[in-house]
Image 1 (cartoon, rainbow, N blue to C red):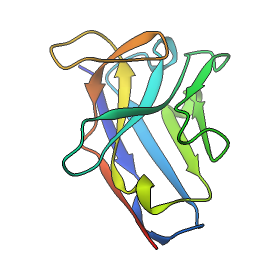
Image 2: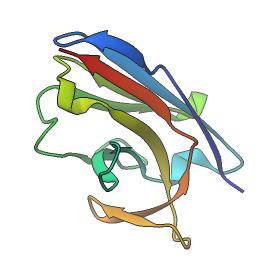
Image 3: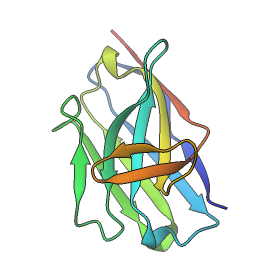
Image 4: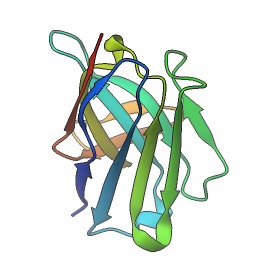
Length: 126
């Protein structure tokens, strides 16, 4: 069973930065693509960014391209999302996800992500 735990969310002013982390256990992390999704109140979950197991392939949603950077340290079983130049519209619950097909899978960047963390809240004030 894959378990994911996010951290690093918080309240930040527009233009500021945050770094999210996600630790993974229960699965060979290095063999799975990983991703960040987000969901704002009243909106559907949307993909933010994803990264292949060997870090060679990354994908970014147009809304975060050039501002967010995804990375991973397979030795530490940890996924990161560096978020710069944050905007109020980035406010959402951010979820870490691992590649896999389950009853709650979402598609992004060529993979299905079916394992989820509990989320970490990011709030950007104007």
